[in-house]
Image (cartoon, rainbow, N blue to C red; front, top):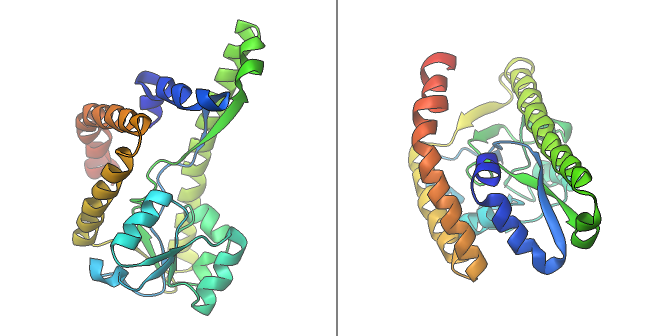
Length: 240
């Protein structure tokens, strides 16, 4: 995602989309891959999503859950714990181990699933008033751009480290109480299929959406081959 913004067409397309709102967008904090969420019951097949009531904040991810037969709700962060504990909802995603444990979610549901297929690289944004931004001297504009980029780096590395520490805590202090599990491969394949349908539907709604989707898909195919033999292979055979 970051590479697409800075080395592909991401930033240019983002500026084009936000121009109508008199805003200059800049990528901000990125929390990296998220978790799939906390579930009160085990997930073994895609059929387990039928009738499931899940708190999920990602709009596209929510549409996938709905297509899989579930019901989605937007529960404020402060209310997730109580909703899960009382069984008002059956599952909830939030962010990752660090933030989730801050809310105490590890005390409400036993099964903590990964990967966060619905939000693999959520990126927040800054939105600067276009007229005010363009009125700045070039050097200050560049300073602002680099400050925004620094926020992204500090945020990504911060979450990467804090989530690692929190995951270790789950494995040690809460062993036997919490199970950190990968979603079964068949379930992930089904979710991927449904997600592709949802993204296709959404991408065809406006010319801007079609343009962004085409650009990102093309860039993803480009870097995907490199990811496979670079980071992917490293984690599988060296760091795993």
